[in-house]
Image (cartoon, rainbow, N blue to C red; front, top):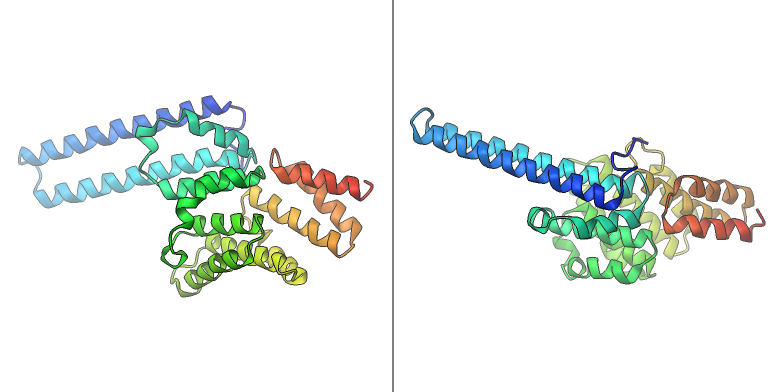
Length: 268
């Protein structure tokens, strides 16, 4: 598990650093574009070279924006602190963050609320995304977040739609990424658990849980579910191992409290 850049900062300080980085990027991007356009206007470079330069600058700007978002998201994915991640939202400068990755960001904030066990506020983030026909959605983060929501509220029929869509996307894609496979397997495990196919769920979770690219929050989520399955199968000491692992690594996720309750029920 990699280190977390924002681990020791408050939510306000995390947002301040994030806003500063975005502002610096925007200023640099603006002046580079102005310089390219002025160079073209002065006849130093031809129009085609200008377009190529502007495209490259825009590409790198977009890549850096994604990197900044990923760095902030480590509060949730590696530090396992969904409350802190949600709190950063009120300090973000809307002008810098309103339009880029809006749907994906809503999915991530929805997942953060689900990690707190707050399905009501999660739905406020995800309702707009759920209104879209799932077979028109191509982003695995969005599909996975909606799958997790319907798993959390026990809606098998809706969950199945999103799992089927992820499966369709994955099997027809020419570029099958590891992260896409992880999201698909998570959804399949969720559906198996709701359908009480616990052997299948256990097998699916074990098929992805030890991937080196797996983020900590996803690992903790999977380990917690293995603990639930072990409890159902009355494998006490396996359940104890899983729940203690959740307690150790789960940070401030809701499943940590639930794991402690389970350990107490098991007499540990």
